Image 1 (cartoon, one colour):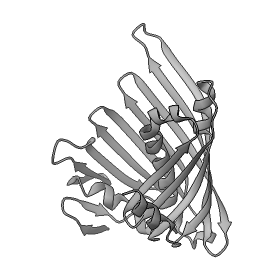
Image 2 (cartoon, one colour):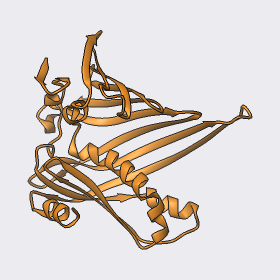
Image 3 (cartoon, one colour):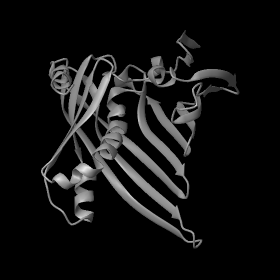
Length: 243
């Protein structure tokens, strides 16, 4: 079944089956307690305090990062992009907003295929497919390939909607390959329902060198979500103050 046609794309109606209770909330903020920045500081033998907050107001989303160590500002945008990916687990998958910039080309063997009509977008081609409670997304990018698989399961506490439990992502850029496997833990929050409270990610990075050697690194990231503020006006206030 297809959703409404937008300016360029036909969007398959997968999302109506998914459990994302905060997706329709206009004003949302929460804190992210992450091991990522601490590990970076440790690798560089630096110390400092930091905080991470996620904000969503209507269609606006952003990550607020603050550090006591100003040297972290050099990788600010990289960290923001990484945390936005994690925050999406809370906000919910939004295929409509993402695919509206691409042109629907065809549906073949269950795959919906979209192309970049401008030639300037990050992904030249996107393919999506939903089967057996798995949402698969393939991206042919200007600088490599990306494959993301979302694993769902039906839960009674979600009124039989499909709950996102795991995310696997593989990216290839030149000689570097990165694979991440994330598992999501939920907890009941008073008056709201079950929300994500922790994402544990196993990361494998592989680099093929010019000397035909392969360098591999494995590590674990833990992101904890908390202090949810829903429709309190905090997100709106933050965007007003920072625009």
